[in-house]
Each structure stands twice: as C-alpha cells, then as structure tokens.
Image (cartoon, rainbow, N blue to C red; front, side, top):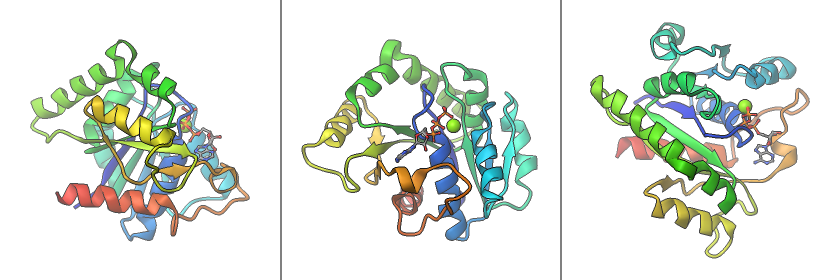
Length: 218
Ligand SMILES: Nc1ncnc2c1ncn2[C@@H]1O[C@H](COP(=O)(O)OP(=O)(O)OP(=O)(O)O)[C@@H](O)[C@H]1O
Ligand SMILES: [Mg+2]
C-alpha cells in the first residue's frame, strides 16, 4: 500500500509547499521512503530544500505536462510520492498530469468562507477535478481519494462552532470530504527557512498521513 499524494488547489498561497515538505517528512519518519516532486515553476520547495541543506528525502523539480509518464522513472526505489502541484488557475495542464499519477488529492485551504467560495466560483475547480477523475477512469485507474485539509486554523483540534466548523460544513454540503486533522496557524513551526529543522513527529502532519492510510485501507 503506497501513498501517492498531490497537494492541489485553484489558488496560490494555500499551504501546498509547506504541506508537501511536512508530509514528506512524516512519510520518511513512517519509513515510507518518499520522493517529493516540485511541479511548481516557482520552485519554492526546491529552494527550501537548498536553504535547509537537504531533507531526509529527495526533492526533484519537474514542472511539465508529462509528469504522469515521467514520474514512474523518477521513482526508482522510492516507496511513496508527494507532488507539489502549481495552482490550477494558471497551470491546469501540469496539474492534470500530476493528478493522473497521484491517487490521493489533498486540497489545503484556510478556514475562510470567502476562500471556499472563490475555490468553487464558476465551478472551475470542481469541473477540473471531475474531468481529471474521468481521465483516470478512462485509462483504467481507480478514481482518486479527494480530501480537504484545513490549514492555518485557530485551533489544533476541530471545534464545534468555530470558523473551521463552518467551513467543514460548507465542504460537506458540496460533497467533499474534510480530514479530521487540521493544521493550526503556527509561524514558528511552518516557516520555510534553513534555520528550522523540519520534524513531523508529534505534529498534525503525522496524523494526516495516518488518516490517509486508514482511508486507503478502506
Ligand atoms: N499552518 C501554517 N501556519 C503559519 N504559516 C503557514 C502555515 N501554512 C503555510 N504557512 C505560510 O504561508 C505561506 C504560503 O504557504 P505555502 O508556500 O506552503 O503555500 P503554497 O500553496 O505552496 O503557495 P504558492 O502557490 O505560492 O506556491 C508561506 O509563507 C508559509 O510559511
Ligand atoms: Mg508553493
């Protein structure tokens, strides 16, 4: 059972790169030997790796529309995969290719109704995700597991009446699964710099991996 995870959203700045690195670290700590592919031309994950003097897993920059055919060769003996996908609104071709090769699609999003509205305006994202699911099933793949990850929440645990609860409900109304685990706002822990050692143990990202594995196991 191998996790292949794409971090994807319509918009930039939602926590895709941060989540890619911390989930990479969580997979490493779980012994799952991840490869992280930075498919964003901005190369911020690659840059973060340079600043940090390397991670416990390789980061490969590849921002092309042929990821679905290129990544299998890049995997070599790696046991799991994370792709940092560029924002769909500007790079749908690259994003589509990434989602074809990843069977778990994680959508990071801040718990803001306005952000969620924006995500679903004109049906852009939903249409894109649906079309890409069709592409997968047309080529004999199982549909991907699509989950929302609330990022930059006020609290580490879900609340009953806070902004995270409102947004959870909104997503549920739209037919989306929201992970139980949420990532609280924490400037110190999630800063993208060389000075900060990336550790996932004891953080919500460790729980995200556990939740995704449980979902995959059915
Ligand atoms: N939970 C968090 N707490 C505090 N800051 C966070 C958190 N998650 C992300 N950030 C910060 O928010 C900014 C955007 O995050 P990140 O770069 O991961 O988003 P992104 O979706 O990859 O953006 P882009 O589309 O520009 O590549 C970064 O400065 C990051 O350090
Ligand atoms: Mg990024």
